[in-house]
Length: 304
Ligand code: CP
Ligand code: NVA
Image (tube, rainbow, N blue to C red; front, side, top):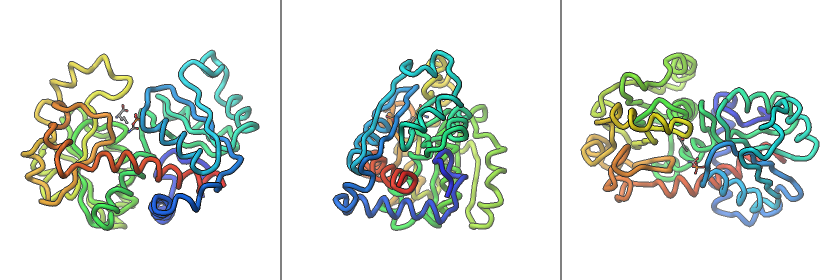
């Protein structure tokens, strides 16, 4: 088992399935795990905003009997130039695990490389693996299983698109990614998982057509058009993504029992119509809840 939880591609399909199964069990019988990580301390480093990640990790480690220590932007010597390698080695002497949300993915990898304790990626500009574990758990709960279902992601080829691609391939989900031409996912990443997708019989489609992407989908997913750190591009992106909103028309192309998914926070009237996110097909708050259970399973697996 990989020491760190930084990208889904570091784990086998079986290992990720086991973590999701454990998360489902922890959700059903949380009391059985109340002292699973007793005496353990999780450091939580945040260089970006967060509601779900921060609160679900902090409450998750408490529910497992451990303690969470929060460090916000500008609080560590790291922000005054102390090398990541030194920080990683020092923190490894105090803590039992680190969760970090930051900009550069390579910073998280360095923290894992130089530290001896597990490092968990709470979102980088490149990916958001904890979110996708909660998402696969939600798909399994709502649709009975992940395999052979079709997920359509509509929006920016961002950190969520990348993690959903990796997650889909690991969990045997067919995925169509629908983006405007200038905002597509990096094709090299599709190539990176092509062999595994092939072995698992899992279809990956990139398209600009919402109708083609959403057609027959069992889950329709979207995310913000401007991610954290891209605030100054907001206006430009509102224009570029015009016509890429998940609305009732898009949901009508999907399977009649399709679920609507969003990692949140959402912008009603931009990437999603209020009638969809607040409508009966939406499972967004189940996804948000499942962050807690999925991350408890990740911490339990790596930190015991
Ligand atoms: N989905 C998600 O990661 O939410 P936060 O940014 O609130 O943590
Ligand atoms: N793509 C979004 C995801 C937020 C959970 C961002 O990076 O801001």
